[in-house]
Image (cartoon, rainbow, N blue to C red; front, top):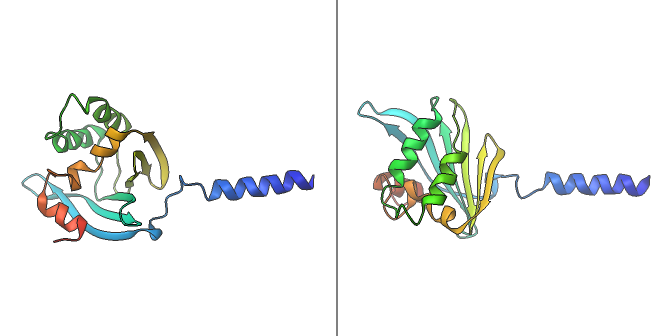
Length: 161
């Protein structure tokens, strides 16, 4: 009985401290930017970029200011991925689109990566995970990639205004 109890305590401690639990308090916030769309400058989300241990772990948090349907998020991904080699990244782009979901005002969506491991969190709950070099290469591309959607936003996120 005592061994079972100790096993349960150890299992609970391991589960509670699982690497799948994301705590951005241990990261350094590099910058943030308000993301607006259309000529009417509709506030969609506030993007915040974080790094841990000189960039070994990265996180991009999107705090939604309005409801956004999945189809509109996929339109955003599609626009952000335009500069990429479509054939090379076809499977990675499909994976990202498949993991995309509707967002509500107040939702937090976090893209986390470390090497080729990528995780998506929706309101602090792990929603998707993949170990894939190509997904890792593109997942933050629209915001901080070599050819981002908006260079000013990239500078704000990286703290290089």
